[in-house]
Amino acid sequence: MNGKGRVSMARAITKTAYAAGRSCPLRGYRSLVRNEWGNAPPPAPSGGLARYRMRDAAVTALHRIWLRGGQLDLEQLPALAQSCWESSGGEGLVDPTATDWLREYVSVNPFMTNRRLVAVQQTFTNTFMGRCFSARPDALCVEGDTLLALELTSARAPLLDRRAITVMAAIDQLALHGPDLPERYRRLDLRVLVCSHESGHAHDVTLSRAEAAAVLTEMVEWVAQLAVARAAGALKALPSRDGCGRCQYRRDCPSAFPPADVTGSVPAPYSWDGGRPDAEDPRERAEGSSARFDPPLREEAPSP
Image (cartoon, rainbow, N blue to C red; front, side, top):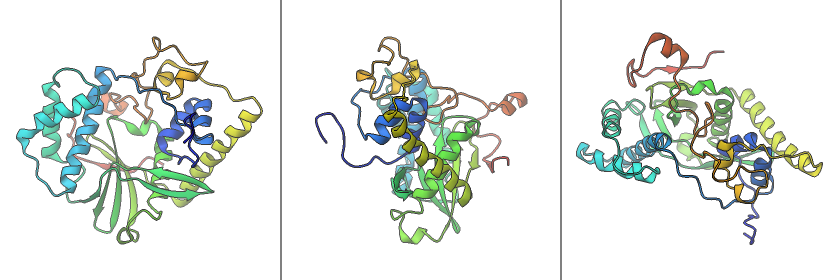
């Protein structure tokens, strides 16, 4: 790494980096083409976003305990909730309802029942058209002859962002067919599930090989076009209060919103990277349902 923070190795394309680049092409160019690493600190999340980050962190901690074969003492849940709250940017004492939610999640265990957990947030990489892609599923489980890649989210209706879902599924499927996956799992049928721990529903979003290849090809071509646009002087920043608040390059970007103006913690509607976690499926609103784990877990394939 040199003094300007640029690394010599090519940066792997991840769903988060790609989404950030699509929101601002200049950010995508610096991140995915120039391979620069910005040094702006992440903004402090608001109480609302910290609440959902706390849930993500707590669920991950629970999964790691289960992966080790450990049993969680329910009396330890308040301490776990408080620790995750503070690490997620929350201030003061965690809301008791968060501990209640966590206790309910442990008792229902909506996504791990009858499944063998084999990995938690492990990174897998693979190449496609000369570019490296990287995936980090929230959990890998084995169920019969199937390997399940679970991607957890706080969004109640994650399928509303179809673009983000297809990008995530394509990268997961590519990376999990790469050399990082242990040999004993390579003959299993791979499925990708998006799991909302707000609604308790899981959705099968697995793509066909042709669909995944088309999505990955478009991503590689888009990253290549960034360099062409930059050389032609046609690459511009697309500043926004939310985007600039999340951007690691905002300190030296002349187009960025001033620090006092950025929200940093207010997510863009339905974006996978911190998207509206409180968004409800319009069908659920129409039916008047507000239960987190009622009705029971349903694994649904997306509509054609």
